[in-house]
Structures are given as structure tokens and as C-alpha cells.
Amino acid sequence: MRRQLIFSKVEEFHDLFHLRKPFVSGESNLSYAGKIYDKKEMVALTDASLDFWLTAGRFCKQFETEMAAYIGVRYALLTNSGSSANLLAVSALSSPKLGERRLLPGDEVITVAAGFPTTVAPIVQNRLIPVFIDVDLATYNISVEEIEQAITPKTKAIMIAHTMGNPFNLSEVVRIAQKHNLWLIEDNCDALGSRYDGKLTGTFGHIATSSFYPPHHITMGEGGAVYTNDPILKMALESFRDWGRDCWCPSGCDNTCKKRFGWQLGELPLGYDHKYTYSHIGYNLKVTDMQAAIGIEQLKKLPSFIDRRIHNFNRLKSGLADLTDILILPEATPNSEPSWFGFILTIKDGEKYSRTRITEYLEANKVQTRMLFAGNLIKQPAFHGVEYRQVGDLPNTDKIMYDTFLVGVYPGLTDEMIDYMITTIKEAVYNT
Image (cartoon, rainbow, N blue to C red):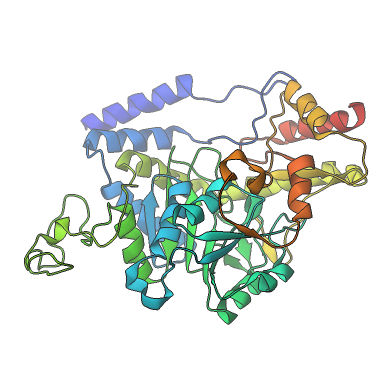
């Protein structure tokens, strides 16, 4: 009863202080992304806070179960970010539990340089060698025809993202991975709800990842997930997430295995507490129940969020169709149904237009822009001195670095806002 009274006050607070302000053309900021929530998320957060469990608990378990059911996989594990999910995915493939298939320092992982840095960072952090392949313009995904020529005896895995929600050519990538016995990690952080050949992305690889940072398809503030159908990989992922421990007991539970003091592992004495036995050099990358409670409510809204993203993308593309002589508009990968994360635009070769002038005009007129993340990652200062290999000169990756930008399609954008964006983009192109 007391909880219900608190919840009613939280709902009142939401209606007083958290309702969205009306859009005013030319005055309201149009962000490229943002969190969309209502009183249900605020009540859920309050509910979890009143438990005062503070770490992972009942809400985390519920979210993991519902997330796995939505994706259509056996296991989903919550972690504190999409970047951490990527770190766990690569680290798990180094587990001794995988025997001869485990990744070892010096092994190569095929990826792309036109993307977010923490798709690639875990490769480097695990002392593996990233092998960079160019991407196709319009889809901004890996050029699949170049993958096989990049494979050497050292190649052991492929790790790539579905760029801005646009699935890469999964039929071809999966075929190559199976042919050469390579691990496949899908960075699904920008593509929750995207489909390829009717199946959700994140279900094709050995491991896949999601991000729940506020700009993403759903949010819990900071948060991410890593998922798989493989029970051995699940154990490795969980171990790396939870300090590297061998024990799989949930927080607050003991002796799930019924032989807590009956193990002998490594050079430890027989009976050493399994709860304090470590099979991996791990991390602490868990989330709190408060975050998971928000995520549970967000997951219920995901279908409507996806529909709105698709609607906004299509409205932008239709409205900008008369700029195709100047700008490359984004194209969905054949046989895919993207859950779009953004709307990517690239100035065509030979055009006199300047990306900087266009984006400065858009920003000055309240339309937020972003680059396609790192542009060409190997040109970033962080990659100075990092060992890598590249296939060819990566001309499209460089093109993206110089001439590509993006605007938003997130569910908070109304038709009126999208129409203002279309008008402003045209002004930016023709007036700069």
C-alpha cells in the first residue's frame, strides 16, 4: 500500500516535470538520438530502488529472460554497456574451455575501420590483430567480396557491426565463417530489432551484443547485453563478466552446484571454496537492478520504437530524394529489414560541397549531426603504434572520414520535426 502511494506521487512528478515540450521550428533542438520514456519507467526505477538490492537481482534476471525470448536465443546476459558486451564477446573466445578453437594472442580478426571504436578495441585489448576491410557506400557495411582474400592461417574470427541498424550481408558472411571455421561476433548494438531473411540480427553469429545507452533503441541509462545459444560460451561470458570466477551462483546465492567445497581446480587444495575459484582473468561488468527495471519497461515499447524509426527513415529518404545528384542516400542491404539507428548522408565525389559547412549550418539551425563514428579508425590518434593489417587502401572508409555525416531518426522525432530537418538539409546543401 505504501509503495502504491509512492508510485502515485512518482507519476504525478513525471506529469509535472518530465512531459516533452512542444516543438518550435528553428528554436527546438532536434537531437540525433535520445531517450523516450514515460511514467512507467520512473515507477519501475522507484520500485527497484525501494528493494534497495543495489546490485543485480530479480529485475536483472527478468530482463535477461525477456531479452533472450525477444531475440530468440537461449541465453542473454546483462552487462554495463555495449562496449563491455563487445569486450566480453571477444574475451570469451579466448577461454581455455574452448580447447583448440580458443583465440590466442597474435590471431587475426576480420573487421572494418569505418565504425565505432569499441567494436575493434576488444580485439586489440585481447592482443589479437584486427584485419581491416573496406565497406560499401550506401549500406556502409563490410565489402563481403573482399573477406576471403583477407583470410590467412592466422584468421580465427570475424567481428563486425550492423552499421546504423542496417544488417550486413549475413548469408555471405555466415557462409564464409562456416567454410573457414571462423567465429562470428555480431555487434548488434545499433541494430536491435533489425531482420535479415526474416530473422532478427543477433541470432546468426556465435555471440552478439547490444547497447542500452540513451541514444540506442531502448535504454536503461548505461547498459548492454551479450547473447548466445552456446552453453559453453554462456559460461565463459558469465565468468568474464563476474570477476573471472568459476562459480555460477547468482548474487546472494550459495552452493548452486551442491558441491561448493568439493572441487579441486588448478593447483588449489581439494575443497577450496568454489565461490572464490577463478578460471579466467575477468572483470566486474554487471549492472544494477534499478537499471534493469527501466529496461523491462523499455523492452515492452521496442516494437513501437522500431516502427517509428522506420517511419522517420522513410520520410527523410522520400523528402531528400531530389538531392541524389549531390548526396548518397542510405540503402538497406538486400533481403533485410533494418531497425534504423540513423540516417547517413555522403557527399558525392566531384561535388563542390563541404561537409563542414553543411553540418555547421545544420547545427546552427538546431539539427544535430554526427560523423559515422570514428570515420577511419586507423587514422585516429589511439591507433598510433597499434598492430593491424588492412586489405587494400580502404578508399570508401577514407571517403566516409571526409564526406559522411548523419542525422537522427529516433522515435522522439515527429513528422513536423522530420519535415523541418528535410527543409534545413536542403537549405544547407544549396546555401553553403
